[in-house]
Length: 375
Image (cartoon, rainbow, N blue to C red; front, side):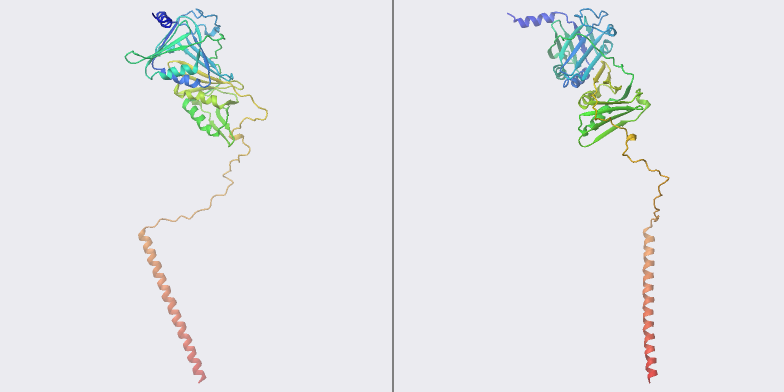
């Protein structure tokens, strides 16, 4: 006689799943996105929107904003325990279908453990097809297939119905002020400034230039990205915001997701770090700035430093002393000069010797004269 667990498993297998999604080429991107979030986000709320035109079908009372009534795809939102970081995914069906298939019969809202789901994706080998299916009992099945379509991984992920069912989504381009830079450069800047060992990182914007500033017990460092029209800088206001360095490093791990990253800034508003992932959609990290302290002054730019000496006027400085130019000599020329010097030395010795002999004879004659006069 079959056990109740096996009977329940067979009945679930016979039921048609609510959602089915096939992933092939973007499996590595899914792993990266989950790895970025698993250490700081305990859970993520995932909204599976129907692939048909009826978004309200089976919505279970979930409140959907009017701007998302026609959305088809997956939206995920996660918040850390301190309500400082919000991570948001927006994967439309049009992007998901370029890599595989996304089908969903009705709207489903589920909550999943981020660390566990990340471990499931890491367990799946790379370059293999993944199939995710969702049933009515809040369970998601993840299967991996090899090249011969044989199952090599089969995992059941227990989901939970979230308490809050109100969806608040920040559009990826909500800010009109952005700095576009290469994602690898953004990651390198944060790695270079990590030697300061500070907990805070200032991100400042002035006249289109972007500055990263950190201060620690042993000193400070500022990295400045000069204004460049090729970077599509759109920030026309000055921004001085202080963020937790740890959260920015997590957001910078997405350098493999997209060749470029959009950094959206505005005074006294959270920073939005936006990646546009091919085959998936938008991945946004929204980080709230730290409150400004009364005794803390924002960092200054290089041209605002009062202790930096002013550039020296070249017109008022005396020219450097002239250095005599000594031409190079050949070995033959040096030999000739050496012989001439030796000949001159010998002539001087002979002349000095003759003078000495003549001087002595003169003295003798003087003595003879003296003797003759005496006689």
